[in-house]
Structure formats: C-alpha cells, structure tokens
Amino acid sequence: MLTLFRNDAAAYFNTSTEAVLDRAITLYQKAMHLDPKNYFLARRYAELHYLLRPARNREGLAAWEHTLALAGTESEQQEAIV
Image 1 (cartoon, rainbow, N blue to C red):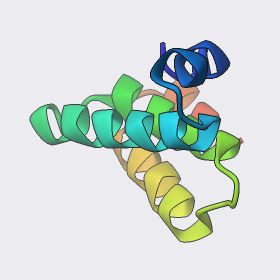
Image 2: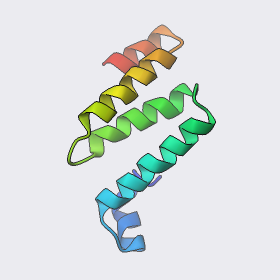
Image 3: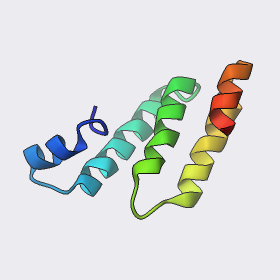
C-alpha cells in the first residue's frame, strides 16, 4: 500500500516519496526473508524497482532473476521475463 499511496504516505510522514519507496523496499525484503519462496512477493518486490529514482539496476535485475527462479507455471515465467 505504501507504493500505491506513496504521495499520501510522504505527506503523512512528512518525508519524500523516495524515502517512502525505500521503506517499502525494506518491508518487502523483510517479508521475503520470512517467506523466501513466495512468487507473489518476489514479483511485487521486483516491480517496485520500476518506481525507484535513481534506478537500482543491479538490485532490480537480481529481483527479477529471483522471481523467474520461483516461477512455477508457464504464465508466471512469462510474467517474470516480459
């Protein structure tokens, strides 16, 4: 929800949208630590990298590679490589 309402969260916490996205990254990393084989979490974490400015290309690529490794169906594989 932080990513969806990042402008509202930034205003509420009196911070920048970049700081809100950094917090979202941290929360996704913690969630994936607790459930490392969760494809849905991995995909959402990887998608979050599209919003980051400046881009974190290596981190984003690693996130997508991890997502692809977790993909169990052909549909999930296609989502991870497109």
